[in-house]
Image (cartoon, rainbow over all chains, first blue to last red; front, side, top):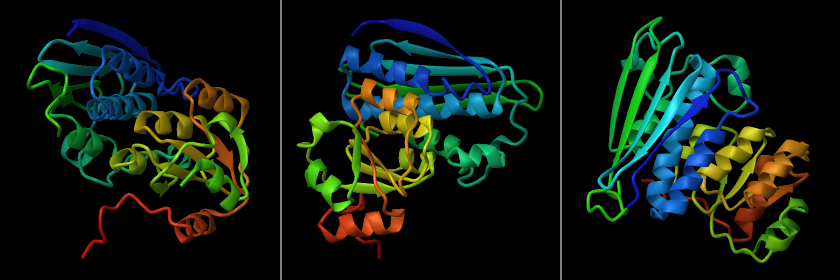
Length: 149
Length: 119
């Protein structure tokens, strides 16, 4: 299992490129040879968090870290932060504008989808202080099969 | 169901993927909400959507959608076509509305992603 750390920039409100980072990550994980269900879970979390940064955050970064026991995705942005984290994890709760809803987002499922797909989720955010999100995917047997969550 | 049958049932135009019409697809999903698509067991499905923008392509790639059909004669732009080509995602456009398109496919045997009917 190769060790890998790669950081990608994410630009706020860049809807032309939004999602490209996650597609690159999906490609990297396929190249390494992880099984499809695990790749899908990681890609969905990367994509939902990337879209969150583009829509709600400021400029930020997404870092992929692969080691023999875990895949880690860390997403940081210097945006306005999340006022109420508990509410943000509630299905259907959304602060998205009409414009974002018309683009197919803002259903209030981003963070709930992340929680469902990752093995562990850690979030730190405060109003005006940016957001840090860490998602772990355990490779419990060290063979790339993941936990089968 | 073969993608070529889906094309015929939906009287669809194939924008990308003429070479993939032999592909077999077992299940379908219809949504304009991208997070709904990411929520469900939508890997390998035919997606019908009225959402005609680049994120429909990217979300389909992330979710592992087998082929995408835009309903109500939506015409994808060049960027969408290029991205669909790049990611080997067949892209079709049908004149039918979402409801009618889903109904026609269901009548011909394409089913949704539910394992069984909820009680």
